[in-house]
Image (cartoon, rainbow, N blue to C red):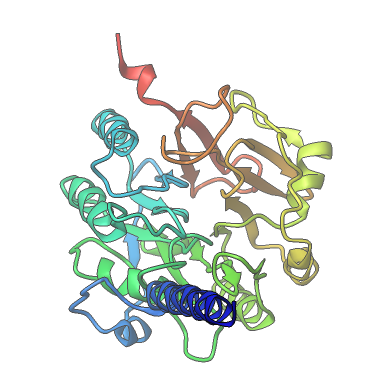
Length: 352
């Protein structure tokens, strides 16, 4: 009896040991994937701080068009949903005139441990495609892009290998991507676009959303007030003012309106609203993130525009067709309301 009891204890101890070892190994694997950089980027992220401010001359007609792609959530670039997304994007790109592409966050899927997940392969396939159009493009970090296999800074460093990729950041400012793009018309500065990092989750994948920090808002306001021209601001996660703009603003005709979820995704982003609400130069705030929400409204002197998903790998309701948003800025307009034309574009609109 004592011998049988001793054997049982040994077996139990061995089982516990196996479980503990397995748990430790799996936990170590997860930590490695969460904190490791699998990008193989040849560029050093620190080079982002020395990038010159891009500047573009607007043509005679005074129009500058921004094509916004967001929430594609590419898994590896070769799965069926990703191939569908890439094919649709190519159709849109082939049939649309634009001066700049902004990838407004969540280009790739977030936390995923499956063996065929490969976000850098997906970035390659996407970037190789848009590079063919010889137009500048940039990226606002989303909450998913840096969750695994490299932070947002690794993703940005990887993208820096592409000839038309624009990036920048300021020392001492929170986040991985903050810079202005300046537009001139007939030799004069007339408009600026600001790219901002709206944060991710802390801790990664399971924590609460970050919010836009005071250092970022101060940087933004300083740059805007120095330029003193209308400014379009692009970042991924919306601020609470979108809720008010949806409920009380003047909707842009022709843009679908969906309020599947509340627009107050990160209440702490009220800090951004409070610090920027009185700034006379902010003429547009453009966001993404809420996959089945969609809106464009003029409210309290500026436009609020939020785009639903652009990719089939992103979770969304059945009534949503992945699309991109074309924002055309008329730099000759003398007021924010008349300054913009918006179009929501799907590949289906070009198919017979």
